[in-house]
Length: 193
Image 1: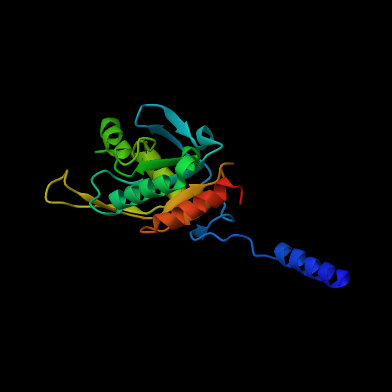
Image 2: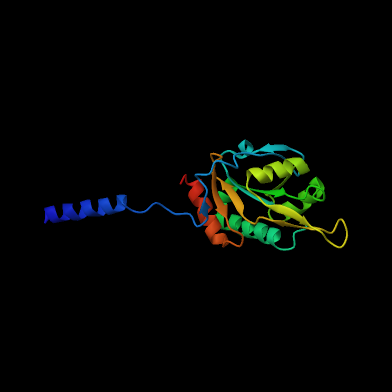
């Protein structure tokens, strides 16, 4: 009987050791060699780099304040994910990078971005800096003419990039992802997965 019990214990331990590692819902970007850093200014006028957020998971999204659909739904989804994280939300920083620096002034970013969550930061650069950063992150954006010169819209990529607390680019969250899945992925990153 003791031998049978020992055999079952060994099998249980082996099976526990063979369990599959947790998987992310979002696209794993761990192997890419781009999107390593940024040099931007936040809506409070403070210069920012990725290293400023070391120890936190960082979600980086490119958009613009006059976006009618993708940007507000993305930020609202991130707000919901932050609510689901509870205390872990203090270890997550959401960054909104404008692709429309001509219209998205620091004052407008300061009004728009934190309206979704008080911890969210709006970031900006000049036109040249924005273009260089978008290229580095493989982000597409292009102005589409409106009825007046200032009423244009901007077509842009819709995914959000996620860095782990060590500052490594790890995930791409698809637009429209369920906030429960976003929160689960962020918890895995915060746990060191």
